[in-house]
Image: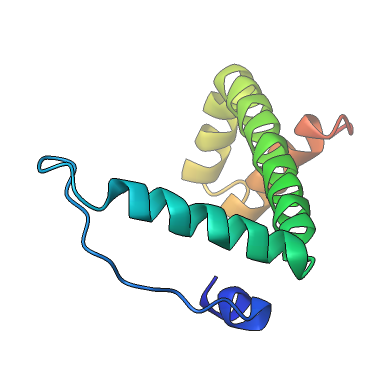
Length: 107
């Protein structure tokens, strides 16, 4: 993120803000709005949105895969663990077999 800020040409400022005392909040809001305006002006706002969309997509994909792995492992994990514990297959092979099931491939 630091490099991204530097690339955009934005110069961050440090200010004192206290929600308890109610000081500096308006100034902070103003600076946030200035930053947004700056990002839009130099074309970086679209880049931020693009990066967030990509990141969001990867999070959704990981969540879907994790849920599917959990589902398969609950059904078939016991047998895989038995095979690994008895030395019939190694952990890597067991993992590949589970991933093949997740991806819809036959053993």
